[in-house]
Length: 314
Image (cartoon, rainbow, N blue to C red; front, side, top):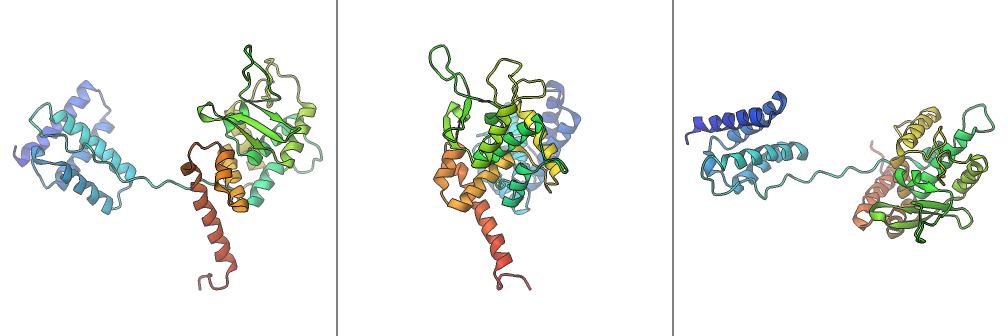
């Protein structure tokens, strides 16, 4: 194959994608850019001569040009599809993209609230009012429990007032609270149950909500209720927390998982016990929990920069 025909193969491939797979013009255009860039990086090398080492080298060039891991992964996917199609058209020793992976994407640190902001958020009340409505008591109990125990929003929504048995003696609830012992029992990922302590402020908020909680309209034992009296959904919890954060003047967009991140970060800052945080969060692997050590270091670095007289930039 001569250099001029290399791009002809590309157009033939794209034509098949357009007619047989009916991909959009926008997608076809993206594939064309990726494959033309491959042709350019390979300096017109015949497709049959491209080897895995060449793909690795070209991927390294893209990485050196500061192209993001997500973009490199997309280009590799485009190249892999093309060589897979080409192997049915001409004789290829192997698909040169096989075994080549994009650089790992940097894992973003979870976003957590500062301690003061978290406490202010979950405990704030509407200005000018000494008492809360039933719905507001429900919200406060939910938000306090999210921050107190680091629950996932689905775990929170699945809580019942108390333990109940199924027909054969198995737990009929996904989770329940035990205010007497100060614990919440939840079913997390992989149907694994765990017990997490409930803080004193959350226990007080829960007791206040239970004092006014009406019987659920759906006959369930749901702890937290929607406006219709049925079990609250994770989406409703998200919306209520967002509205509450805006009303409280919280300076960032808040979602339930941010309270879980805040719980983990603040417990780790106080205790330094990573294994305990792992157990309370319900992480199967300590690797998932270790991200909070980076968040904790970030916090300590910020404190150092503010407090140490020799750390401040001139």
